[in-house]
Length: 167
Image (cartoon, rainbow, N blue to C red; front, side, top):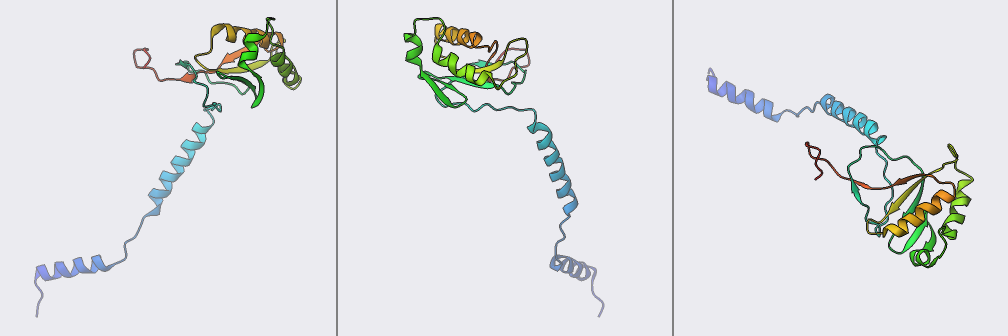
């Protein structure tokens, strides 16, 4: 007996449904290749400074990237140079001279291993946004006296609106 058109169509449909599905890996490999390339290219343009949870950095919208330098962290309680505790911040206030000697001594130890350009070595200061100006001024003066005249202040980057106004 001759099968109807509908019966033939249903038979073809059931044959296709029972076959193993084929997965095209070419497009999946293309996506992963592009993703890997994107991650490699963009990973080299970002520098992340390890921030202490006690330090709330001020906000800024400058686009220049930070260089890897010696890092001095100034929290509400202590001065920390490259992860090593230098002094309590109260000791800074109690010091009568303009140069804070514990910080100067620690910087001079590190100065021997850092190349100077025009007698100025680079240093990044990560100071809490609520640190009093007179404290920061004394710290910066001490850094300059120890041979670290190329000072950078670390800030947290914020995005800008299209009109140049900060968010």
